[in-house]
Length: 636
Image 1 (tube, helix red, strand yellow):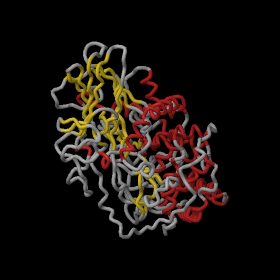
Image 2 (cartoon, helix red, strand yellow):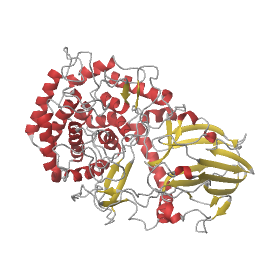
Image 3 (spheres, helix red, strand yellow):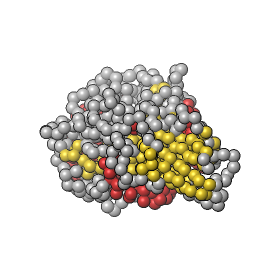
Image 4 (cartoon, rainbow, N blue to C red):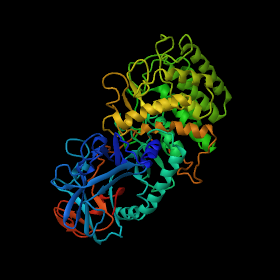
């Protein structure tokens, strides 16, 4: 699921065309994300989709009506008649294209539809270290014949495209399987279940679309990330679940604590709060074997292998990752009311809180998670994060002395981390009045109701932002030219209504009309010649930060976060060995992808092949290859 802008949903409902920088087509995992560049959206017949990183993908959809062949999607080079495109629109759960063949509205006679992909969906030689099998120079296609149609009849066909991985990854030394693997014995059964459930899933997705329109009709573009749910392979126990996220288009780490998880969390808080403990459980389990006094940065250097924290490298931000972990634990405990869940981890969390006590008031040298510049001491933003982290720990543990220390540190920040007139925060203690920075951690203070900083501080920053907002967004700090859109939305969550509107409008304009055709842009310059044109990030789950406005709104109005009665989580503690032994991590294979049709025949090299029949030479058996995960649905 890839939820998108409720604000734009309203625009589409009114019949207007809203351009996205890139439209999600099949966005399931870091290895299966197909996008349609926004600059090709007005003629999908000749468009070519792309992998999130920009590599072109072959994905063709062709129809034959009464002997006439038409391109429906993805045929940029073929000499095939293009259909007329009536519209393209998207909702929180769908990208929908409406097309028309011929000059009349009637379809009579035989209608065939075919969809095909090729080896561009697989890892190619020389582009990755892991081995793979893939088709070469041929399309893998599925087709369906509707037969005779007339003006009063309608029909549809559904095709699915998916990815199956023989090895999925490791958590410590234990191999992890995908959630569905213990539930169905063969891949064919997975495909059957997926397609049989499609109608119900479609209805559920429509309900979600409507709920988001009603609840978040004022919210700007938002997406949530690529989450990977798995269970220990050795036990095939579906009662024990873990969630992992990849720092896609960044470091490739597994579940980074300082940047990715806190930016993704607001979307889960609003849409699926039961995912929060799924993401936190593997992190907290690894803290049990982590010897440092500060929180770990991640749980693995190379996704999907969560084989242990990455130590002593450039991506370590001790104070920031420690502070944000404490925020997130309390962000689950407070709405759930479950005070027992975190108890097994309180000794480690207590150690982390003590680290903030020692270093949070006057932060030692540390790099910023935003610009990764040289290490600097006394960064105001890091001190703000630490004071909120201490208040969060005081709340989740019931230890009032940590709450008091957090309040004390907040007073220090107001004395040393603001300009001489106390009109705004400076980037560092004692910096010139011209120095300033976006104080996005205040959003977690407001979300969690910690009152580390009072409303006067929110008003101070809101007034300051109002004079800084550019047409393409709010500059992150006086030291850089770019905005960080997800953090900008967090800052908006603590602002007055008029400043919120300015921030939302600037992001709306840039993401729908100016930014280059990339999926999920979050960082671009807001000053200079290239303002609002190029994003340095793509497809990151950090866009979940766009949901902070909705999350704070829910929390402030006392709207309960609905948690299911049976969470996908047990109280079991899983001690993770941090030094894997006798485990090969370089042979995780990403096999070929093929398309699976719900009805009809398959085609390869022009030869029709019915499911279960002998496959053409060079292709793999469907049972080994296909796991359905994303749909293309054609209605006639």
